[in-house]
Length: 76
Image (cartoon, rainbow, N blue to C red; front, side, top):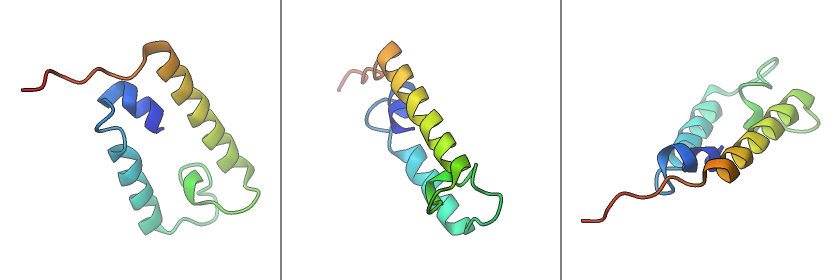
């Protein structure tokens, strides 16, 4: 997800969405059928969580390879 964020937001801000998402999921204390939206907090062999994590990884890498990181603006 951070790779995709680097393309969309730039390298400096690329960590913020994942940090906010991780914090929100951690505070929500997921359980039961939350394996899809709380994939980063799942333990053990949760197939749904692994599929979502794999899809996010592939999408982020593909987007980063295709477009590259967003260039930083002029420093002034």
